[in-house]
Image (cartoon, rainbow, N blue to C red):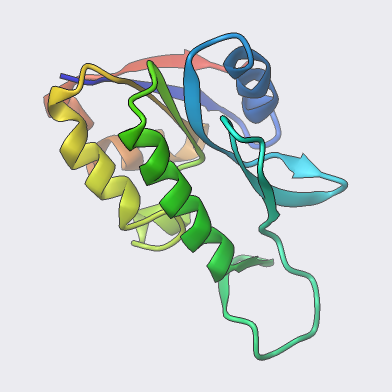
Length: 157
């Protein structure tokens, strides 16, 4: 059975920065979502490959995933989902998913890949770290059925 850990904290409390430093010294892979030069990116941990996620341009032909005041490039979420699955198949000791938020809870963002990983991870023994802002923890626990499979918390603060 996999071990699920929820790294939680308020928005902009250092969750991603903390994980970047930690992942550099551990057998970890997955996706991080740091802010680089003021814009959100997705980064594959193992390769360091980074893609700009947040879109602020005016091109109306680009497919966007919108939430609140933010526009994200749908193609980058698709890339991130593929990279996350590749990470999972590589069987690292630690799989990091930064972050599970409102988009994933409504079936967008890193979905449906995240659901597939959670379904397939039951027999792997892999440690999975889900980054979740404090206000969404209960929703994420419910969405992925974590009460039944067990999980642990740790806080970025």
